[in-house]
Image (cartoon, rainbow, N blue to C red; front, side, top):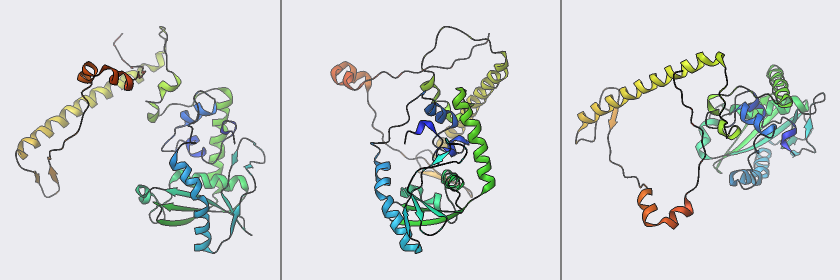
Length: 291
C-alpha cells in the first residue's frame, strides 16, 4: 500500500509522540512528501521479519491451540478512510487477531514479564479499534530462539485518544502545517530545511527561547568542566593502579587501543584513494550572537 495517504498501525505511536525511532515531525514530513519514506526493500531485518511471520504464526497456534488464517484485506475506519490498518492474522472463529513480530536478542528485556513495547501496544489497539475486535494477541520470536505471546484487550479510552491525536495530525498533513519539533528532531531538521537565504526574520516571541538556549549552553559548559576536573583527580589518585573502590563504587582506568585514520597523511600520500572515499557532508550551523 502507498503509505502517504493514510495513518496505519505502525504510524500511530509516532503520531502520538510515543515512538522511539520517529517523531511526529518526521512522520509528517514523510506523509506530506517533504522527504522520502525510508526504503526498507533492502533492509535485511525487515526481510527476515517478513520471512519469519509464518513461523511465528505457526508457533502461536502450536502453543495456544488457536487456529489462525491470513487477514483477507486491509481495513479502514467506517467513517474516516484515512484511518487504516493491516492485520497479520485473524484467529479462526473468534473476534481476535494476531500481530507477529521478530526481535533481536538485545531486545529481550523489552518483553520481560508482562512488558510489551509501547509502540506495539498502540499498534494492536489501533488494529482492534478499526476492525471492531476485542482481543489482540502479539507473538514474538526473540533472537531466533525464544518465543513469547501476550494478549492485549481493546482499550476504548486509549483508542479515543488515538483517534483524537490522529485527527489533529491528519489535519496538519492536509494543511501543510508542521507539528512542533522535539529534541530528537535536532539532527533531522536539515533534511527538511537544507538551505538558507540571506534574510533574517523578526520573531520577537523567540527571544526567551534563545536566552534559555544560551543559559543551557553555559550550564552544560560548566558541568563538563566540573566533570573533567573530577575525572582528572580520580585518575591522579589511581595513578599506576588498575583503579579504586569505595563502599558504593568500583572505578577502573584501563588502557585501550583504538585505530584512527590519519586523514592528513592519507590525503598527501594517497590522494586518489582519499578522493575516492571522501565525500561532502552538508550542514547548517546554529550560532547565537548578542544583537
